[in-house]
Amino acid sequence: MVCFGSEIEMRRVAPHRAEIERATGSRLVLNEPDHLEAFMDKWTTVRTLRDRGFPVPDSVLATDPGAVAAFLTRHDLPVVLKPRHGSGSTNVYVVRSLRELEVLTEYVVEPLLQELLLPDVEEYTVGVYKSPRSGYLGQIVFRRELGAGLTYKAEVVRDPEIEATCRNVVESFDVWGPINLQLRKTAAGVRIFEINLRFSSSVVMRSCFGFNEPELALRDLVLEEPLTPPAIRPGYAFRYWDEIYLEPGQYAGGEAAFDQGGPKGTRSDNF
View 1 (spheres, rainbow, N blue to C red):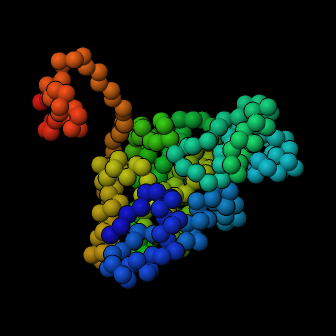
View 2: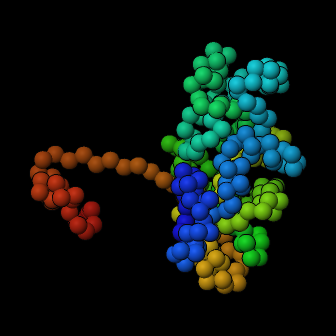
């Protein structure tokens, strides 16, 4: 089984999925190219969800002066400007002035303008698994905070509105496998702003709380076993970055070991 977490790889490989599977005997966890392209485009995602009656943030193309002018009569600054295509929060900006909007519209490739969804503390990332054989299986909801474009704080929560909305979305489209939905919960309710048809950066966090998407996919797509809904455990996850600084002589491995990539074994045994 081949798992994908990179949209660049997915876009390149998806058109050749059947050919690769026949030639190798492997199973590629990839949806049809049309679905992948639709959900990789944030503008198409919002329009498609809106047309089916699902809650999304008010959005317009930032390159459409008439649409932007009408948008700014509906929403006060600040607002959000982001690229139609992208991931990891790259080139996503909170715009606080008309001058910023003018400059960033020129800077960001294919810019999309959206209302700012508040409060910040009500952002969620939801992992859903849908089998191509038996349909919707289950989901896990994280309330999260972002750092460097990734989830770095996550709390497992139960929220009936979020769970029902995400299930309805997934069951409304002919997609399967691991599906990641990103949303905020505002005073007006849930607003979905992104859908990823891939293994997302939170997959390891999810597995620690009982929602192991790679295992589900393996049992479903390769072993073709009957699946049972995962039992989700409550809890919290934290990511952090660490740096260590040493004076000469403090590193037991020595210069030679450093040049060879560091000592083997545990860090505590060598520092």
